[in-house]
Length: 232
Image (cartoon, rainbow, N blue to C red):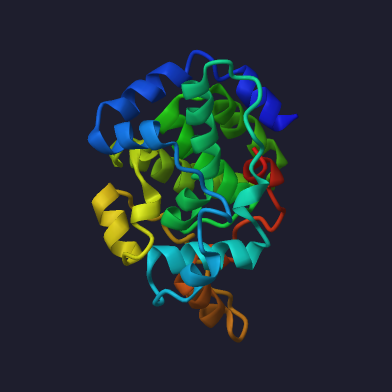
């Protein structure tokens, strides 16, 4: 249902996305070759064996950690123009790369933050709907975290990053993740602010640990899964 709604509302947004892709040599190559992000196109075992810190190793680790498969993305069915249907398909299939680049997990907070990024980059109505409606599922604390930390990051990164649908991520997988971020002008999401130090024993250490934790494992993010973001 979510995938269907995304397709039915995407019509006016897809031609401008296609045009932005076609404005660069890399984007034109993607439109010409129509590469797919699927198990039969990616050697996941080889990606998992890449050196630590590479984009491909981080991507394989992300999928394994969360039990995801690139084959889970729904095939576009209700976009009549073949090229625009491919643009929509490509948008779905690169979603997990954006999680890896951002460092955000597939929690509700993480998915909503990525949806804000996608909304700024693509203008797809389904991204806007998710960005504004999904926060209702969050606790007051997570909503404050989203509004104070992750929405400002998403809007800024969406504006300053390379047009992300014009990137051939498959060619970047062997590179260090930090180098890929630099190339794409993609700032990783900030760490959540540390909780105030408790007067009890160990409170300061717990706050410091929360501040130092990687975003993908950060305790302040909601633990509720966001299948709507993954199975779009």
